[in-house]
Image (cartoon, rainbow, N blue to C red; front, side, top):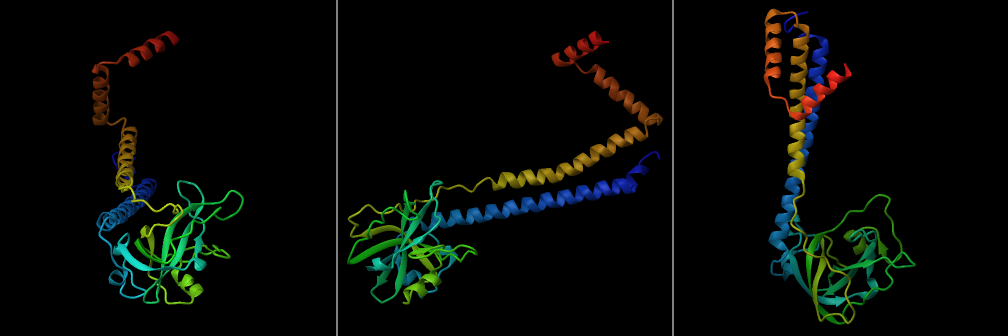
Length: 282
């Protein structure tokens, strides 16, 4: 079989199918990385737009108890009410800088009788129990809070908690525990409160670092990998063509020309040393 006839064999059809499959998978992974980058950029836009904005009254940001739009994430809202300390909850499995801990969820009873859940911050797991050693008390009496909105969390299968602990910040479940009209669309991450508490507050959330991640470079790499599949296929096709047609006068002439160019090419020190070593061994 001479010329390019071998390229139409079942074997090479299989190679082509494998290359196409590999390229499709790589392209899919590249598109997935671009989608993840878009998600990261959307999150960065929300941070830049909302995190340092002036706080608005919660009734303006959330017209009803179930209101919340994802574009409102990190938006500061202002609330005035009284903390329901006896109803305070601890959200489990909340690592901070790889340290295990809890987030302190304190219901805030507003003047209209509704309840808004305030995440007052993070506390480390205790030394001898699966709970913080101590939970700093919030201010008593009427308090004005500025908190940043965050969406309610769903329940996670297999995650359970007991007592005053919760596995996730599922506001519907918390509302059932409180048995009172409660905001279930979003809760608030503590920014400030007035008057200030007598005890040191739990560690509050800080502004996330602006980082879109390596998704763009990963996407580029996957697309390059997909392209390399066809480049490798073309190289293998060319090498087999040269082997199959080695006796063809035109191909033999091209092979001689390649050999002449290699011989005329200046050799580097490593190639000279290899040649000397070969002569010594022979």
